[in-house]
Length: 185
Image (cartoon, rainbow, N blue to C red; front, side, top):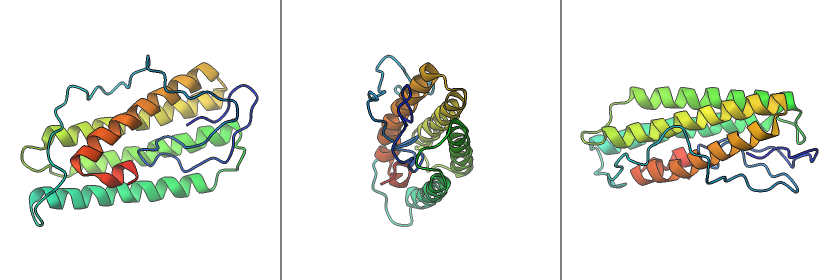
């Protein structure tokens, strides 16, 4: 999600959030990695037990849920790619603000759609963990857009760290549950 550090322009702006590669896979020359271990995601899913298996019997409630959930996340990924495809290779602060605001809106829609599905019996907590992290990714994208629009480097770094933490958590909760499309797999 790194765009700019100091006056250094970024390389091509990405595909925003594939819910995991999350918030943007842009690189900035001379910019340090923003995985600040001191920054935590607002949605704490670390205590949520996410142990359901990733395999499901064809036709079972879990198989049907995974089919629907992965379809929602596939659409989210395509929408994010479309959103990112129109951004210039050296986006202005306004371009970045618009991109991440739009990415947050796309993730909000996917989260709402996932929440509308009926989780399989026994999997309510696992599915809630996925949507909580997706909500955190959307919040991080929104924060990044606001920070990029204002040029506040400290806020950009904080939003980047927040998005990176949520991205890593999404790998665990969505990947562990079987929603591979929610992590860009």
